[in-house]
Image (cartoon, rainbow, N blue to C red; front, side, top):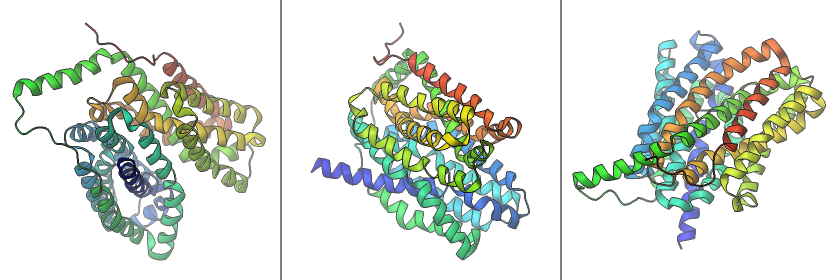
Length: 396
């Protein structure tokens, strides 16, 4: 019965995460151009508003994580569903640049309490050290967010315009996302009126874990920032990058379509063979996959584009899971949500920077910009290699 209930929780949370990612992170790719044309702004301005949303989500993340540590994920994720609906409705009603940025600010707040970090924290709050397989499960489901979101946004924009697409996504959050997040199990709330000394002792214990593992936490933050930069840069520029390497537009689109299935394949591998390994070991293997593919693409061009897409996608799929499992394995479940929010701050800033910076490098160097991403990937591997699989000891 417990296993069945856990499977239901993973299915509900994974479906809600698919909706959250499809209607926020993957929204600008399909709607930025018509949105910009209608509002009288440039397309880069729409992406600037999206970058602002990522920064807002980074700033909110630690507070959302702390709330999940205290009350569980159900109320936080339900609140995020309402914020997603409000932000998307505001986006559909926007009439100028001010309305655009205001709507994306609301969506950024929703993202800060409604994407993977919050979902991972919810599962750890529910299942503690046993959350690894559940984390993998929701990433398997939500790995199809772009596969669902891009065509659905495009279809809705074609049928109802970009404003109608925003309103439809808002309605889905109310009709689907909110009930799914509302189905999550409740957790035992803190005992009513805990003694001040006990509360201070619990907080001190959580903080000492972070203080005692400051070096490990810094390395992990670097890993997450680098891998999120690479993932976001590739998501924004992959077709153009492959064309710069010599592929035709049709070939670039076809090869780019391999990334999604490769991500899912990587997550299936983590769910099967790699779950017998410490998550640090599987993360190290995954961190090498993008640099190897990047060197092959930069050195040999279009003939190895498909190999690059498969390596990048597979590695990225495993590293997405590592964002949830590594903090759990290295630091334990105590204070997981708050710590996860803190670790995600530099990663969100890196996400916001990635499309602009890698776009500049691509324009200047073409496919040779892959040497830059390969170097970053090797830095992430070096940081993972410097981490110990043993839980860090507290400093005296």
